[in-house]
Length: 314
Figure 1 (spheres, one colour):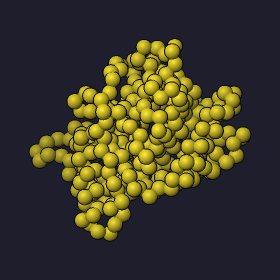
Figure 2 (cartoon, one colour; figure 1 turned 45 degrees about the vertical axis):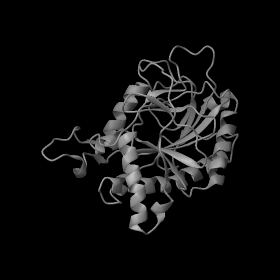
Figure 3 (tube, helix red, strand yellow; figure 1 turned 120 degrees about the horizontal axis):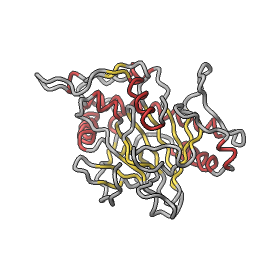
C-alpha cells in the first residue's frame, strides 16, 4: 500500500507530434528524441497536434456522461464478470493498489465487436447511439496509437514497424471512467484510482478539465498531470518496460478527485499486443556483456498474472 502524499507541480512534458507526420526524417527525429527522453524520465508525456477529431472526442465524452447518468439498475445489468474486460464496473469493484481500499471510480469497458468473441461487449439498450460512438472512437484512436508505437520503436533504434505484428490481431480496450468527488465517508487512503502501473503496452488517455491524475517520479515525488487542452496523455505499461529492459518506465500513477467538487470523466485506451505475442528484451536495450532483467514471456502470461492480482481471478 502506498500512502497518499500531496503532489508537486507537474513537469510531464508536452510533445508536439505534428512534425512526426512529415516525410522529413529530420522533422520526425526531433519528436522521436523528445519521446525517448520522456519515456526514460517519467514514462508519461502529453501529445499535442495529433490530428484526432475534436468532435469525436466531445461526442464520446458526452456519451460517457449519458451512460453514467443511467439508473443504477440499468448499469448493473451490464456488470463485468470478474476476469473479463467488457462491461460495467461499479465503484469499489477493483483494487489497483494492493493493500488499500477499493477504488471509488465507475467504469465501462469495451473493445471492437467480434462475431466469434464469446466474452463480447455489453451495451445499454436505453442508449442506442452509445455503441456507435464508442466503437468509432476506438477505431480512430487505434490508428493514432499505432503511430505513437512507431515513434517509440524508432526511439529505441528499432524499425518503425517493429511493434506492428504483435499488435496486428490485438483488440485494445477502451475504458470510460467517472470519478465522483471524494466522499466524506471514504476510508483511509481510499482514492479514485489507487497507485498502479498499467499492464500492457501503451495507454492513451483523454481527460476532461476537472483534474486528478497524478504521476510518481523515479525520485518518489508525486506530480499533478494537469489537464492540457487538445492533448492525449500517453504512458507506458509494464510490457513496454519489459521489452526495454527497464530503460523505459512503466510509472506508478493514481487518481484523486477531492478538489474539483464535481465529477471527473476520462477515456483510457489500452493499446496492448495480442496475448500470444512474445515479449523479450530488445537487442538495443541490453548493455554489452549483460543479461536481460526479465525472462521472455507472452503478453497473455503477463496479463493473466495481473488479472489474478487485481481481481482475484484470471
